[in-house]
Image (cartoon, rainbow, N blue to C red; front, side, top):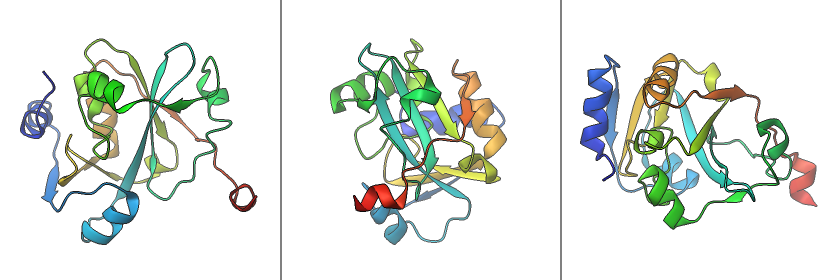
Length: 173
């Protein structure tokens, strides 16, 4: 049974991690988030749940405005093939969240260690990181180092790397 948002906040507290959570209307896209979340300081995340052809799973966490180069992301990740998005069913099975609520906190529900967590180096330049607390009706702010500590406590050693960006020229092509 996946953790609830309240269970997650209790887990953060048990780890001695300070957090601030703001409730808001449901957010499904970056555009929704920017329009409805209010003024919450720090880096805001966009989360990609991806898989390769061998079934390896990746949770890639970048800053919300980042345009990820999905065609080449498999290279620095060492994936077995190019990446595609994991299905909603697989997302719920592994991270215990629904589409629209994908979050860097999701690995707390991956007790089998199936997903590799990738944190973008650009996102990690922010002292504070904002993530959904397993639901898309709130935003939780924690320190960047606390996010890493939390992920390690779930058994997921995050990889921090400069996620490849899509060029504007590629967007126009």
